[in-house]
Length: 210
Picture 1 (tube, rainbow, N blue to C red):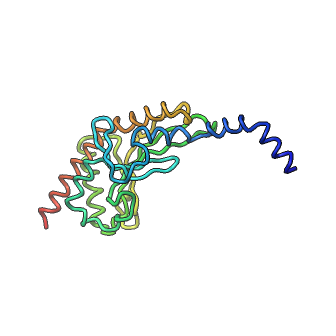
Picture 2: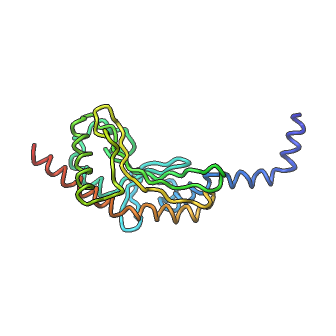
Picture 3: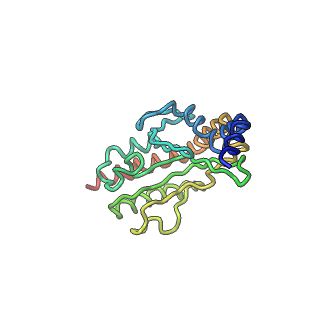
């Protein structure tokens, strides 16, 4: 049996290699490399559309980063958010794009996520979520919405983007993946800007209150 297996591999290794090269997910790492550069280091600034982003990390199916506007807003009050020091980029917020395959193994979708992390000061976490929620409600931002009870003391992670995915016809195609990754991120530029403004205003008020 082992000899037959070796012979089968020897006779068909070109075909097997082609299948491996076209396995689902292979287009995503190349697309990420094109957008963020080869082997980027955490903290690298990258321009996508009209906004700057700070690279955090990546795996086979996702890449994480932080809008520079959010980082700048938080930096002045970074010590106010303990509990996130070792979470993603070390900030109370993170964004990432992930790729998912459909059952056919060829098509799939990209999804942009944004999340508030495990701030150990539950009151500070609740106020941060409330600030973004109120700003989104005041401006009728339909694509920003926290789940009910996101600010509860028992919650550590709370995502808040909606209608946040794009279909991929072929997840193996790095060209399509790159184009739609950029499109997905740039399409949310207004929401990214709004959250940055809400953060800045909230943190200024918090600092003035101390």
